[in-house]
Image (cartoon, rainbow, N blue to C red; front, side, top):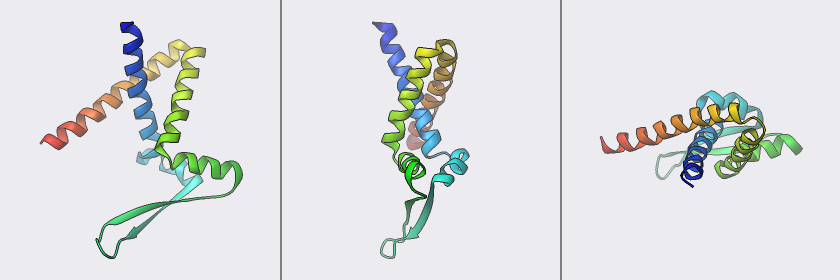
Amino acid sequence: MIQSWFLFVLFSLAVFRLTRLIVFDTIMAPLRGFFHDEVEEKDEKTGQIETYIVVKGEGFRAWIGELLSCYWCTGVWCTAFLLILYALIPTVAEWLILLLAIAGFAGVLETLVSKWL
């Protein structure tokens, strides 16, 4: 039972990191840019910058654009990818999951530390 809980925590952290990588990180902006544009507008009342997603194309391209604009949707597909990889090539998946889980945990720690300091 402990191993299954530990694996669940590792998968959760790995999916969190992979999803953030795809949806938010700058390094993946060129990939996202093929499927949607991010439009920034300044709110006249508050002065804050708001970002909107404009999906490009039709059909499959638009579907991917919608997927990449939704953190929850992308998270489900990232989960499916890691689970299938783990079922088919467990040795490779274990290393990838461990790498992503450690990076995800480090990101959570950084957020907590930066809020406290």
